[in-house]
Length: 150
Image (cartoon, rainbow, N blue to C red; front, side, top):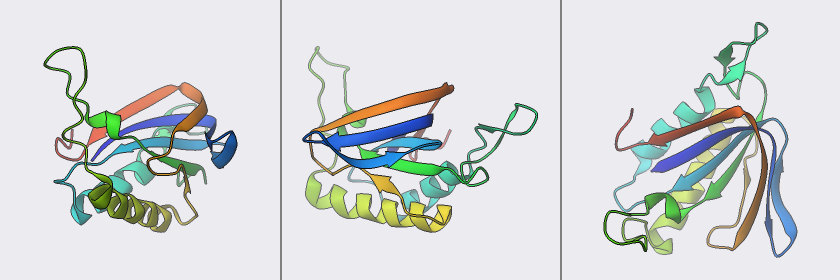
């Protein structure tokens, strides 16, 4: 699994001009899924996202997590995170899982994040043409890949 995590003051995702997911203070998480991903990736990544200390403490130091600040998470599926750009100028998405594999893993990630955060996770709609609006706070943007675990 590959993610781009953004600390936001607010974020929303719309489909057909209707907001389907929306948060205020928290994390906007774009999630790319590949065939090699499994339950261990979900558990590790969910814990990492919920416990990342990227929110300011009382001294203005990034030292507390989204859970600590009682923030929210907006999870958006994004197969383009697995784009291969080595050859030519048209990206290949061959590493991105097909819906029959990706949807169950996406749903498991929603459930795991909800359990780890202790509240409902806002989402986009898998496979839909989504419009994402956000106000990046910081800006703070972090990339995590469960295969690299950097």
